[in-house]
Length: 442
Image (cartoon, rainbow, N blue to C red):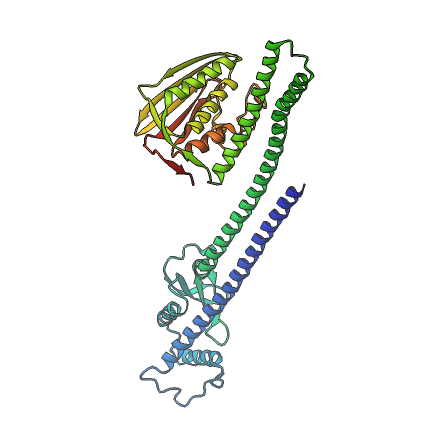
């Protein structure tokens, strides 16, 4: 419930951050849009003012020739003065020079805003276009932006207006760095949330694995401990003193169960040492066929199933490894081949020399491993699932992790090739290098 609550709160926080970021970008866009509108209106107004004063101060004109320009105001009101001069010049027969205005506006627009497509238009009070000019491509009128209408006659019968094509490009260009930063922030936040959720899921998985491991450990240790306790009590009573064969059988059971517990403890300790990089391997020239054949003899004696072993060493006699750990790793793979199989199992062991590596291939005709499980079976506490049994044979999921860590500690590798319901083949690869000394792993 706690983890579910954390996931909900995290999701709400992520959505809130994205919403606030969206509002911030939207507000920024509106602010830049208003700023662009003001700049365009200012550029158009200034261009109209420049054009009228150019005509007013043109060579050959004697200013106002003593005539009073109606509507003119003090110099601190240039817009009113420009409109008054427009009216005066129109009466004098020199109306607005549209071509000259277009040239001035283009120049000022490039300086203040940049090169953008526009259409400069002279319209009447009803919106009819009297004159127009275009710069660039403004075919998409629906997304175009219209500036404020600037009057050029005192009676508001004629106006100048500009249509800007795709003003959004200008606004987004100004927001480019902001958009990139926002995108990066969103990605970082999303990735952090993803990692957090992944960690939570992993913690749940670890907690589940620990619980399963505890149950499996208690189960696997309870039986031999119970057997040892009962056997010891039986032997202590002296009831078997007159039955030497049965007494030896009890002693053998006690030894086997004790060795089972010891092997389990050693396996866990070995994995812990390899994880902390503080275990030393004694690598030497090892008689590989001897190790494998010795293991097979033990399995033949202890076998509870019909087992057929096939070996092919291909003239490989030696490998450089720690004999104890290598033997235990191979034993784990053979034990798994027997455990995860039907009542009759065929196991082939093939040794080859390939690219300066000695490869030990252990193949069985067991239940096989799915592709999904093949990716995780070498992880600690991980075990394959089975179609014929939801849990499979009892175990901790330590055997293959032990094999993987021991072989990688030797500088080698272990891989699996399997088809569910058909076979499994594990390949141990060991470097064919002579290192006749104690090598520290880590």
